[in-house]
Image 1 (tube, one colour):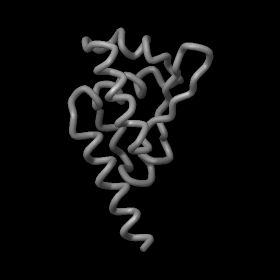
Image 2: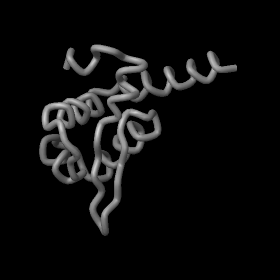
Image 3: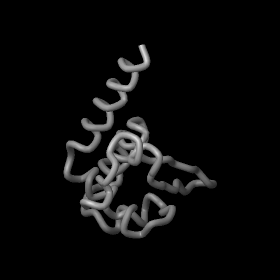
Length: 94
């Protein structure tokens, strides 16, 4: 059972990473190495707010990012624990 659950997590992660826009979001978060507002990330990526929001959701659901809401602003950070467990060395390759 544990192995099956782990494989399901891997599939979610790999599907989330199989998109250039999401890779770019991860790259921005890694380069800044701190929590960023969704708008700040959006400034680096030329996509609409709704499209970026969709990508944030996919990354969050795959366990690759965490989102914190403060009043009307949302802040995103990388989940280094997930990357270290399933994709060691991946962030260094970006």
